[in-house]
Image 1: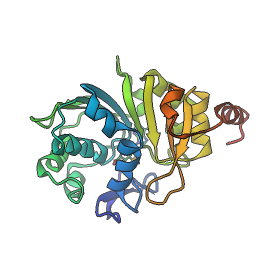
Image 2 (image 1 turned 120 degrees about the horizontal axis):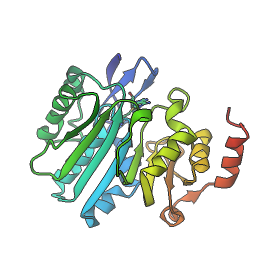
Image 3 (image 1 turned 180 degrees about the horizontal axis):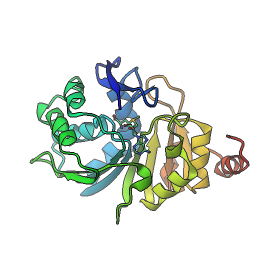
Image 4 (image 1 turned 30 degrees about the vertical axis):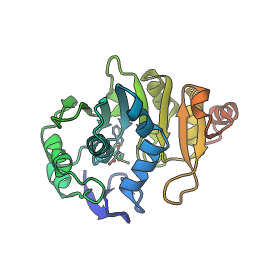
Amino acid sequence: MSQHIHTTKDGSSTLFSEKFDQYYHNPNGAASESLYVFFEQSGLFRSLEKSDSLTVLEIGFGTGLNFLLLADHLKQNHIQTSVDFYSVEAYPISKETATDINFTDHISDPEITDALPQIFDSLKPGMNTFQPFDDLELSLHLFNGFFEDFNPSKLSADFIFHDAFSPEVNAELWSDETFNKLAGYSHSDTILTTYCAASKARAAMCVANWYVAKTRGALGKREMTIASRSEEKLNDFKRLNESRLAERYLNGDFE
Ligand SMILES: C[S@@+](CC[C@H](N)C(=O)[O-])C[C@H]1O[C@@H](n2cnc3c(N)ncnc32)[C@H](O)[C@@H]1O
């Protein structure tokens, strides 16, 4: 799959996908948006300070930026929490692209960024497990294949990073089937975050019985979405009308 490297406004790289006709990240700041949506608004940074172990599930490994940001945070803050990071990627980037992308403005430790080309170089179809850093309790479980074929046993994620391309071009990852499948990998306190604010995507979450809320988006975007299996987890956010959105979805209002 052809991808071209671009530098976003915060200095971090992103890719442009010819296949999906879309950037992998917000051109106003790849690392800045990732940190805001998946680490700050989700509460993951706070949870890392008080948990012995955590499990993250990401939809769309892409450039590996979220995994690297997590590794960097653990390292810079001397956090010894044991983290299992699951991710899924159908179209892995090449080792060469992984070498050329640049996250050094946000990830200062070269040991972290240097791990990326090695990961892509040794990737095999199906599930791959890596423990790239000797001094961190961080395991990467990277499924090289379609999310539709992803079928791990005993996965119960505390945080879900929904980081697919937009619903217009990557519709299968925003369907009620997908959010039902994600519900099967969650527990009552799981938090799912995404940069996406599309009503159709939110409604698909509602059909799959997620509670859904909105909050301010990153870098001047009006909104992003945060969902959970428990209502209390969304107390700090503005809840949406789940039953109304589900009804509209099932009526075909978003077709
Ligand atoms: C927006 S990008 C992910 C960005 C990534 N989290 C990062 O930080 O670079 C979406 C990713 O989802 C992958 N993808 C799209 N459809 C998929 C599918 N059905 N199954 C697995 N991966 C898919 C794409 O190849 C792409 O790498």
